[in-house]
Image (cartoon, rainbow, N blue to C red; front, side, top):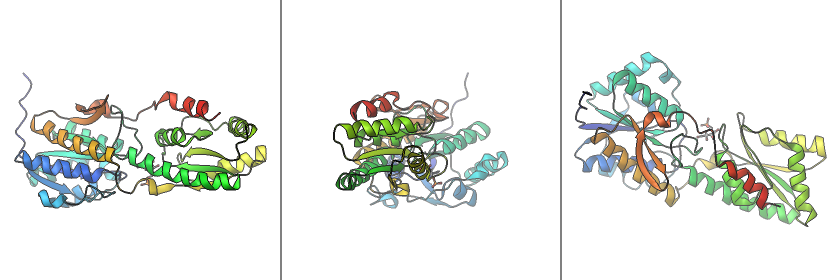
Length: 329
Ligand code: F6P
């Protein structure tokens, strides 16, 4: 018979990895749902780094007042390399036990989920993940918290760039975020009518970019937009600009959107998604449904086994690239 899960009386929440708009709504939802369930709830500052430093504070309903419209994360965040070490995770589990914290909600991306899974596997800490990253690259969920806002921010920026592109008859190469993920680039490409999108996992095809731009020019279009996911090192757009000139004598302008995509007021979709997810995460802990993660699938938020959400998404709207090409003729 499987061992009965122990009753959870006290939980903690942390945000980890890159911040994303909507994380604050998720924190608010976790804190207030936990209070409604009669649990004690703690906020851990600066992700796993803060956990190791014991930066843990009791929260009440007012601790999360007036935050849902704000970007970033009130708990702050970090990328904690030390958490890759088994000894460090042991120390983290001990800190949680010493503080009488029974369970943990981790809001973050792939690395954060890995840390949570190991805390559970090695030390039996009940964990639930909430997918928080602008990259939309977590397996098992159709959307992550922050993606919608980041795409909206980038689309608004490209719309503005398009005004200048048209007025001056220019080609712009716009670099968006996504070290490994093509999701923002492909969505922005579709939503702004870009001529071409460059993204990780697909080699840059200069001949194709040129022929896409020329096709538009042939029917009288005087400007064009190429959207580029930054890839491993931000600044890839400059490389592409240089190559387009060297290979085809095409002059272009570069605009790198950078971290403005990570900040700002979360969109209503991100607010709703994160509020739903925070609620389900706490319910999951109370009902013994862990280790798990909240996921948005086919229009509903559900709890799924955490192992289904470990690892990056490999496929992103396979039809999106085709859509960009078809609609920009
Ligand atoms: O949060 C995800 C992400 O924005 C990636 O798209 C990007 O490549 C990376 O984080 C950059 O993160 P940072 O500037 O925090 O190192």
